[in-house]
Image 1: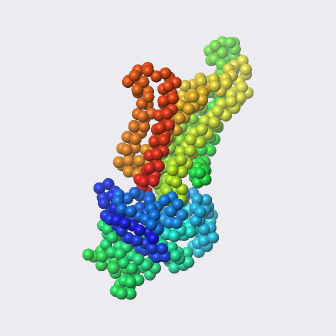
Image 2: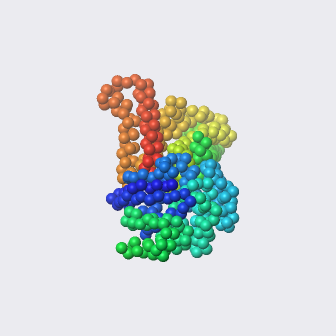
Image 3: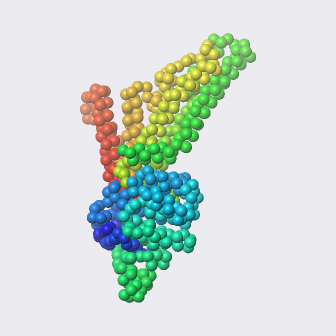
Length: 229
Length: 277
């Protein structure tokens, strides 16, 4: 389980996070929702120790993040994390060289699923294919937790559908996933848990299925209610 | 260790193309310089002796003998050295900043590798060191080759053959790059490598605290310099001429090692606790 406990973060004079707490379980898809600038990416970066927090605590399976933790948790930001001059094959080789948890078989499966070619240069990829390569490099690792920042941002509808299909496949099974997005429609039916952020705090956290069944509301309905207040 | 070597190899690969271009420019420019300078000298000699009917002795009196000393003062020779120095100085900054900027933010990947972040730092530092030493080695190999070309072009009566040491010793600034003795090597390259560590730490201050980090980085550099020259300051102002030269030398080495250790420790702290994407 990923536990985010009362984290705060200030950039200069601006308090971006004001005591954010939530948990994300293995085998569940947790979605951090909020309008632009509420601190979703900062939370992801903080979980991965890519930005220091001012106070609070983040635990992964009860432990603070260590270098070994990167074998069981990975982050897919909305920019590609490989060099533009690399080919997809080079990027996969890089992952294989550095990560014990790299699963070449699964990566090859994803390559074929996304209809990508190993010799394609990263700099030549479209936005949609860049998102797919990002996903491939993340899902190619045998990690327990996967963090994704705006995976659907700025990509075409077919790529969105393909990426959304991955979430219902065995490729994501049993993993804990945290997604940040403000484009909820594509994955609403996939989400287990929703954490709505506003102005640096968690304003509502709920089980998506529960809200759908008990209140007959969609995640977007709840989001509208929260932001109207 | 294995991951450090992989990262080091990776960093080398990223700059290899430019590095090979620098090597090619240096070789082509310096050898061209030898050929052009030798031909120009011979042309002057021909004109003086055959056209103006002057004697060889009076030509040599007027123009002097041709040697590597003449070559090392030409733009053909110094230009590529200056280019390499400037490129590597810029690369000390570029080696970090290129990973943050642009649409492909490779720093995400580097900081999420399942290895100590210090390996990333050491791999980048080692790359700079290896490239500097590589270019110096190239120069040391080139000087005798250039000497041989000079010998093959200029008749023995018109030239002065010089050893590598004489070539290096004949030009002060060149002596900084290619030390004359092992002690000089320790001093020049020790200071150079220490400066790289200090600048790396200053860059990490900036990457951790952004605008505030620029000030912190500058203060850090100033403190490091003051610490490093503190034995010299003590000897100059507090107890004038109290220490023997060898004592000052040993003190400088110890203080230099402390400054390097401090830089590595601070960089490790910044990379693990303060760095920001």
